[in-house]
Image (cartoon, rainbow, N blue to C red; front, side):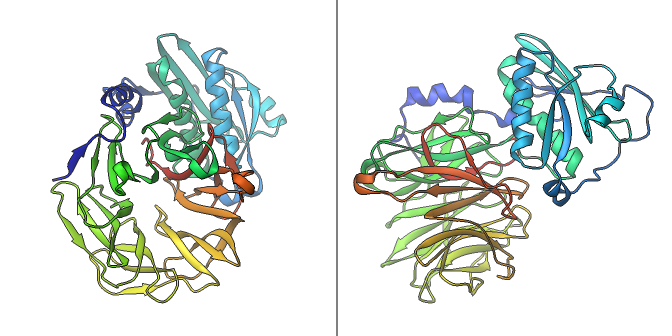
Length: 454
């Protein structure tokens, strides 16, 4: 069985985090214990069936979709409109036109004159318990595409904005949105040579940042569970580097397996029942799989080299990992049960930090060549390599749930005494489009995207 421990955060601090962090239960098909009720709204006029999405992401990247958003009645409604505007704008796929009508039938003629392709109407009513109504309209056909009312506590207003944004994204582009997600990361503070590192979590837009560990020990590489409110990470707690599990619902953590060597680089299996990680052995490192139910472990590589940074394919059948078994760090793929591995990276330089897209079509990686870092993607067979962004250090790629965007860490060169050093989180479309910095409180690294509604 897994060993319980509490070296990273006090019981009192853990208890105060529970209410704030338990969030997956807030989302449901109709009504949940978390207090969010979703009710379909019928069309406001007799229309034909709502059309399917006719705009592709590629089209929107070339010509962002003009969409009119209201202020939802001012007050809390204006705050929801601001978050919704930022969500859509930050994708680079939408052009938000503010100042639309609140509720009631839209003025389609006026919307067409503004060049809008879609518009939203809606309102926010109530105080302690609020009701948020939204309707999405196709301006060209004058049809209602979506109508939904959300009833919840006012404390959930920001999350409602993200959920509405996901609805708009999906109905307009035909892909699941990713706004109602969170990012685990490492918060960094202090002088470059003695930075305190803390496991932290925030909404995908950088809001609601919370620290999960106290910063006494070096902490690295958080990874979200695909099915639970749980994060795996590496900590040097008590000067013994090991992988831990942090439960976001209880604020408690436990050691993931007792190994003779150092355990690091964890990654959950797609079903959330096990974790693959790297363990140092005899000057190298091998990959092990730890079953989260029984605590049993199984070794799946024994190359005598440094095998690390494993990541499952979305169907759980394969693992991509980094190894220097061929003389330099490169990317390899093997069966999730172990066995022979085939090399897939053959470009100039060394490769690391592979992560499989949730879609299964791409593997993201970092590459070091001529003293510079690059972040790129390739097909699982190693073909089609594309570099998306470069810098002094760009590393730790993590896909959003729909596979459209990568979060990553960007660091600048440090001068004498660490002067000029900065560590931040960036986001970039998988085509290299819309490379931007994410605003975080202080310096940050090691981003790890949650699943949708996570």
